[in-house]
Length: 354
Image (cartoon, rainbow, N blue to C red; front, side, top):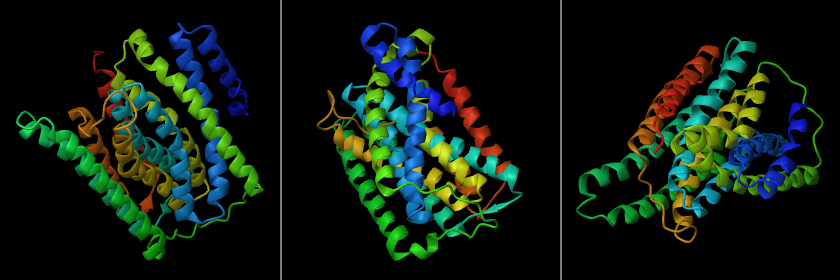
């Protein structure tokens, strides 16, 4: 019910953009609030589609359309030349999904069920893909530190080459998980039967999906335009805004659906949404943005992320591999993931504005 009332901020944000363009803080807040119910509707529509296709494909569908908000926001920032915001949003999405979304889902599910189980093989496979993504972010930084001054143009070539490799690996992962080894990704049967709500007609689900995506695209343009002046007004760095505020808004759809799935004792779906979304951002969205920057925006973007951003991904991937490796979840694991997210948030919050 609250989310329905929050839809009133959609016309408010649009009106502020055109009637009070100098009120950057109000525009940012209104657009941010407006995106939340739209992301929830997007998540609800994708969950309807997921119910028709099983846990594995369902998680992929939810992650894909859930990431639509982040991709749209990132493309808008890319076109504006805000590469630092784009990179921070990418890292924020990866870290937010595996720490905040998965942590909240495990905590919520663990409060209702003493112990929940999920497919151990699928969890390990996705954690390994995250490790691969972390390696892909470390290498450009290491290259820049070692030979960047000798061959300054090499970083661009390396970023494009790594992006192509990541896209190929992601395609291979989809083939592996959905076709050749689909049995290894089947969900563990839940211990209780949960009544499902009445399914939507397929046309309604697709229509809601399309309308929510278009509305999010429009509001994302408004949100991105207000990021820099709002950050300056609040004394926050663009990195903090990108890693946490923008990423949390983009993760709204996954967050709601993953927690709902965990409460229904569908941890395989919850895990597939949270970790699968991070894998998709790291291996598909990030390299796609690098390639898109060749034709969108004032200049190309590379994969050279700041040391703090790379470290955040490495630490998040490290603890996620520990949590997702045994096929079991409980509320304490959720608390542990959320604690790491909070610690990272405190560190980034104290980064001075530059």
